[in-house]
Length: 279
Image 1 (tube, rainbow, N blue to C red):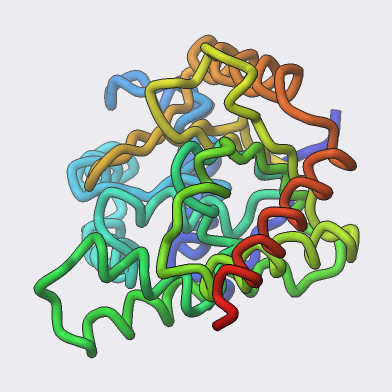
Image 2 (cartoon, one colour):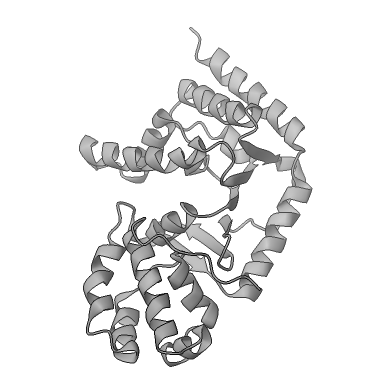
């Protein structure tokens, strides 16, 4: 069985911590399960810390220094590794997303961040924060567009999105903004960069009516599921829980329109918005 993938400690503070954690654990002669036991976490969670797919929290850093006798190394470096330009509830998911090889997402209300245009993102953040200054909104939009640069790579990550039909019909930012936003989604599909399906209203009740869902897989770490609500998010790594969410996503895809029919609907609705915007 091949060993763990070598880490590049210079790629990020989390990668640096992960590489050092693996080194110190192996130096101490501990398995991932043995290190996780006194922390009340699974061996797979330790593996995710080492791979950089999970963020090390300060209480874990304290215990790591104690167990591995690292003289405060993890505590000293934990703060730098946990700084983020994203909201606290989403930061860890965004960082995991950046190194995922596959992302599958169900979007019930709005176009996913990786596929948003600048104008659409601005309208979303203005709705979220109606009293924020223009500078604050601009910073949020900039961070979102920087996330979307993940798709500048021609093949990785694989992004597969199921859009609820409500995403197409909710007039976010007005008809011109929606026309541009949906045409951008359609362009990404036509460039074969993403897979998009639409879950039509006619599908009726479905397995994810409660909220948004994101599934992420990695080359050298277990998969993660992220469930998001207003100003909150939960990153799940429990294998049974992730498996249930994977089944939910599979059921959504089975109920959705085919990629070809979905593209036709997206482009048709975009044209409707474009005509609506004409005087």
